[in-house]
Length: 61
Figure 1 (spheres, one colour):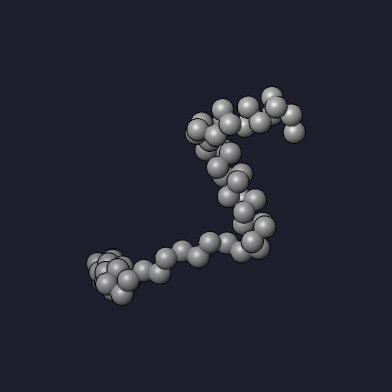
Figure 2 (tube, helix red, strand yellow; figure 1 turned 135 degrees about the horizontal axis):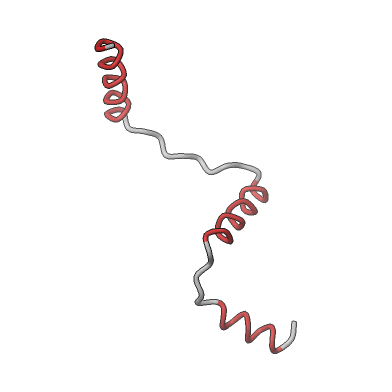
């Protein structure tokens, strides 16, 4: 790694990454870890609300 490479790296450190680069980095991290990120579980209140909406639709139709 030369002086020019280090200067370029330091200059680019503050730049934002495009969405495509972020997606690529996330995929690399998942492959390295060997697992997908775990989604947060829904609270019981949300589950009940979803269930009631489904029952209401079944009753109406």
